[in-house]
Image 1 (cartoon, rainbow, N blue to C red):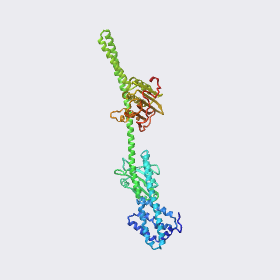
Image 2 (image 1 turned 90 degrees about the vertical axis):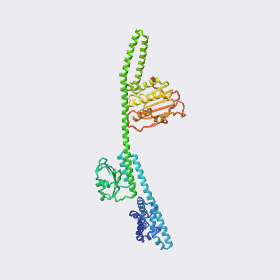
Image 3 (image 1 turned 120 degrees about the vertical axis):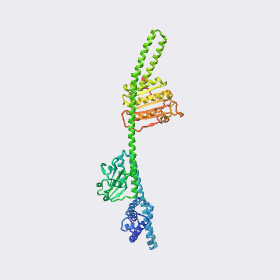
Image 4 (image 1 turned 135 degrees about the horizontal axis):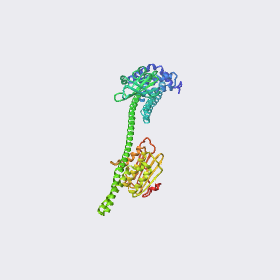
Length: 552
């Protein structure tokens, strides 16, 4: 808004403009005496009532002066001078002109004072707005750094994001970030750049590296000993160098190039130093996370290998039992049958009875050995696949379980060996646990293919148990083993059970659900659910239909 010629502020400006040459030096002297540095004195002088008088007397609009106040107000905020302190300093100019105002007529003096107060009030509003802009820019920069840290995929991506955010904050034309070599401290590598591809290595002397350990704000003429790439700053007006702190020497440096002369201010330097520390911490955290992920991957591969070794050992023991102990027991039984026939021919009842009893014990030993062989390494699993092996397992489970057992399975076909073994072992463990602890009268088992995964549901209507206690019970590895097997294949595991002492409908026992991908996938974080997915199976009844006549 332009000031009219008859405006009181214009009148004040014209009157004061004639005296400003006398008051301006006095005002600057007072500021220096009050402890203001040269940069602050220069900014306050451009915001004084004398500076406004000079611009308004030259017929420039008031908006030009207020824009100048806003710019210098931001500089004062970055010089860590609050708006209140700046306003108090500007009032010194009003005190200087007070004697001159008293020499005027009372009415004219009152108009001049009112105009000066109005101008000072407008200046204070703009000062506060400028300080708010500085704080907002700092808050936005810190927020952007936080987002960069969360969004970074790897160390290079993190550094590129950080240097871009810092260049935007300080309005640099270009920025580059270098890291010192871990094995060769003199070899520095360009890791991030806002003005092109980030590649290249450079030799940095010990003297230059020592200089780079402090924040530097230099002109291109003085940048030769502190810039990693001297050619990069040709034609620049200013160069800033921000160290990335290390234990004994800088871990790296971020350098900013400005097309014009642009000196750094204290508040900017503080934020940049804090950002550099945060960058180093984020880089260390990211590297630790990557190392942890690599360690977890190695542990996961080792665990999978251990399971493969375990299955191979089961097969070896099974073969040894079959080939050695099994054959020996069969031979003993045949010899006992021959001896029994000879004893019968010799009419020796005592010998015949002893031999018969020994033969029966041998036959039981043969049956037990076969059972152990089947449990250790079910030959049907490797020969016919998961579906046939589960049917055999359920049939054997019926022989020892007094309740009703139902199996529903879709057409599974042949799956990866790891998937078949995992599903089989989990179902086998569930059957053993139900037989020992559940006191159930009905068991439902469902195994189906859906969405490129094998989905297994095992439910019973037994007494249930506390799942959290079971997972953390010392010396108990049943549930934990199931979970680990599923996790190694990138699947999902959940179990829901009635806790003893809680009120739930009769027949709601335990429900276990797993989902294992058919194809090999990268392992995601394990999902464990101990609540929800509850079964509504009534006591002694099943809501799962048996789709295999042979099983039920």
